[in-house]
Image 1 (cartoon, rainbow, N blue to C red):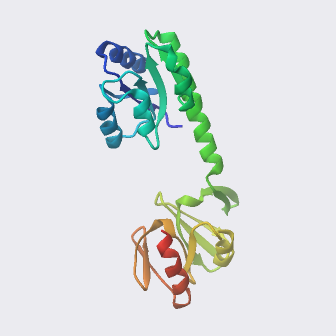
Image 2 (cartoon, rainbow, N blue to C red):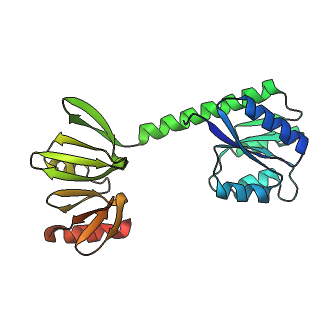
Image 3 (cartoon, one colour):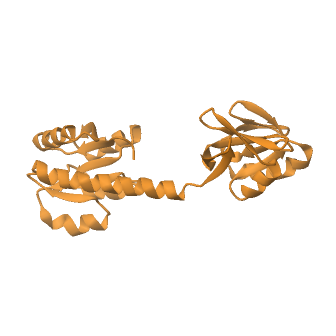
Length: 234
């Protein structure tokens, strides 16, 4: 999880919106992004700046809060706010974090945002676990490298140089062919006897070369068919 969770308040009552904004400002790991008086304004705000969480009033003018939530294909985390308790079951079926009844006191608000924080920690931990990585021996130390950060690998005889998306590189003792075998099915292609390329990082290509991170990597004649076969998938 990042240091703060960005929050958007969707509330048509200025007094209620002001109270929520004040509460958000008092919590160090929440970051207030803005207030929207209705669903249309909220949709526009989310297109311009995705957020980690929204405080969503159910009784909005025009499109109601729950109907608006159903329109979001990838909604942020949601804490509902309302003066009516009868929507609780329906709201939880939509996977909301919590359901706050107005008037909302600060103690109840804190309980809700603690749930928000715990969900964010869990989601980040799950993403970390499922994100593929490998350990490489670098100067007698095993160093973890995320596979999605590897742009290409270059053969240096019995060593390979892994060029990473942060501009850094590491050198490890390994034949390029062994690295190619270990990356099978992970989106890498042998473009040349000296280069293994991550197709996700290819910026441009022609019949004779690939451009990765501004570097022109030649396509060897014996690898051309394999490279061309992979390009349509990316």
